[in-house]
Amino acid sequence: MLPFRSEIRNSPSQQTIKIFLTDASLDNKIKTHLEHFNEIELVEIRQSIGQNRADENITVFLKDDVDINKMKASIDSSLWWYFEEK
Image (cartoon, rainbow, N blue to C red):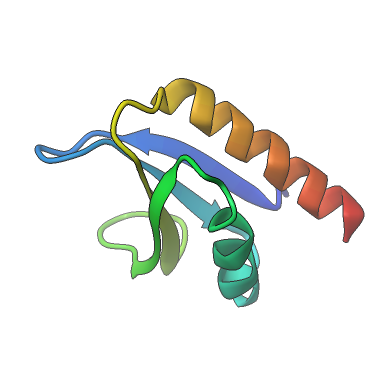
């Protein structure tokens, strides 16, 4: 099983990146890790609603004019590195 899954989500107000961790006990550590990206405005841990595979998710809000596809790739790469080091 993969340690995480990330998705770009569209909402009426702002696109976000949702990260679902296999091990929810790591939510706060990953949140702190992501807060070091200059392109990220805010990182929140939220309860998942609906038929999601996890009880919680990490929601990433980007600063204006940041390319969400490039940022998702950067986050994914950083998380793979993070999990390989652990």
